[in-house]
Image (cartoon, rainbow, N blue to C red; front, side, top):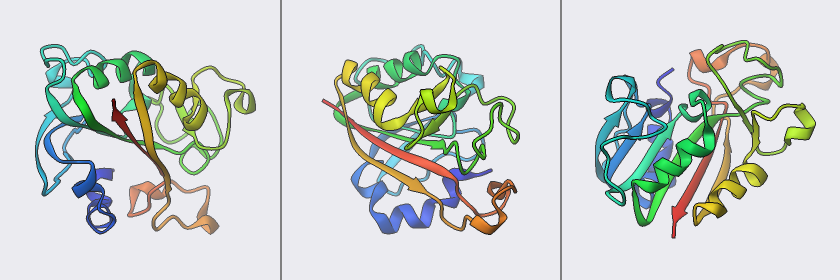
Length: 189
């Protein structure tokens, strides 16, 4: 809930907005919580604008940053979504993605107990073989492979567990201030 807003202060302090989320920003799946980078102007894209997999009517190479927070796991086709998100991104600019961590958010279970609309899961450590499903993506293997095909370089991968209380592991702590997510920053070549 309000995942972009939760991380605002930390992203300012970390330099995430200054370094990556700048210029003409397209926030895919923003809902009621669009990114508020002080270094750019955000245009939101949500269900009322059309299918986020295609970004119809958005020109190729037209945005400085594609930002998406807790949206990719809802897309029907991860590779098609990333292909179109990269398509609209200008060369040398950034894709800034945040997805729920399979272990922290899904608690290593599938289907998702906390969000039945999740179509995919993501992990830094666990592979498709580990979880036994094709709709699971290891960031450093599966997403890296997709990004290579799209001529995109991963610049940073970070587990974000701010305010996550590991002693209360079974709770959906994201209903409060806790984060249980993976940040992926990738640059179009």
